[in-house]
Amino acid sequence: MASVKTPRRYDSTRRRELASQGRELILREARRMFLAEGYAATTIGSIAAASGVSVETVYKSFGNKTGLLRAMAEEAMAGPGPIPTMRRSDEMAARETDPHRIVRNWAQFASEVTPRIGPVILLIQSVVGTSPEIADLRAELDADRLARMAHQARFLQERGYLRPDVTEIEARDVMWAYTDPGLYEMLVLRQNWTLSRFERFLGDALAAALLSPK
Image (spheres, rainbow, N blue to C red):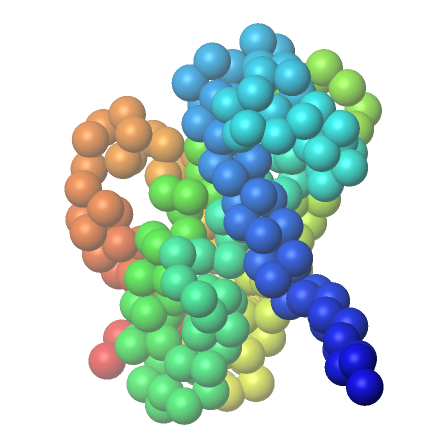
């Protein structure tokens, strides 16, 4: 009696892994080319060629160049490790009881993310007038960061950590201002501060502005 062959099981996990690797490669090449050659000079075709994929693959994955910018920003905001920076930040704040340590740790997390997201935001800002879609993306990223700072300010207020003369809204706005990528550009990229110096400055400034002295 002839044996019956068992149909090969479709390996969807492997396909997803390959798709993820391809997406990461496209984003890496897009970031490199956008920052080195400029937004206007970089085309979907050149990104596809550098990534070793078809133009159709790039469009299918990201839509257009604005979609690539959005994906670059999302990847940068996730931080350098396997666990997203915002999740690590929230977990730290939940277990820490010293407000000064919390704020300084927030400065550390910001210093992890800003070198990644800062150049992307500055690139978007440089071309914000070229299309309504890019202007909307810039506004969306600003609103997302403001919402994040509101979350952290609310945490400080609910824990009773804010100085009596600092309101939750003021705390939100102070943190929003200090985490603006423009400050990183000014001090690190233009004035050649080290990242560790920038992190110390940010921690000291936030603690002085929001918390009572120890």
